[in-house]
Length: 69
Image 1 (cartoon, helix red, strand yellow):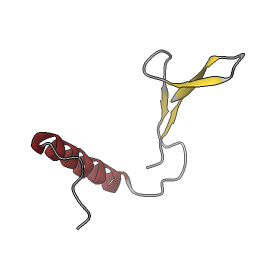
Image 2 (cartoon, one colour):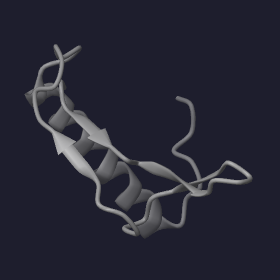
Image 3 (cartoon, one colour):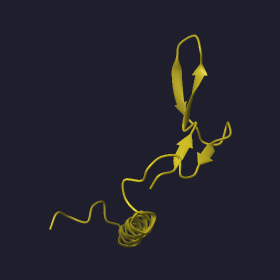
Image 4 (cartoon, helix red, strand yellow):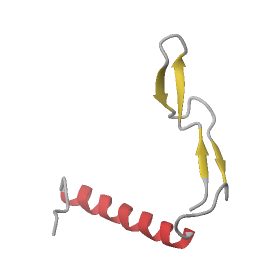
């Protein structure tokens, strides 16, 4: 959608080079309209909403997958 989120992970130990997923330890930076979007924002938001509804449905009904068909 054209936005970039920086510092999603960071190097916790510079000697070993171990990277860790950032869960709020350091500040993340969101740069809006950083590059040309592959898909329009309204379409991206609609897909994210559908994925959220599917996750909620699966959690509510105790499903691990929705199946293939």
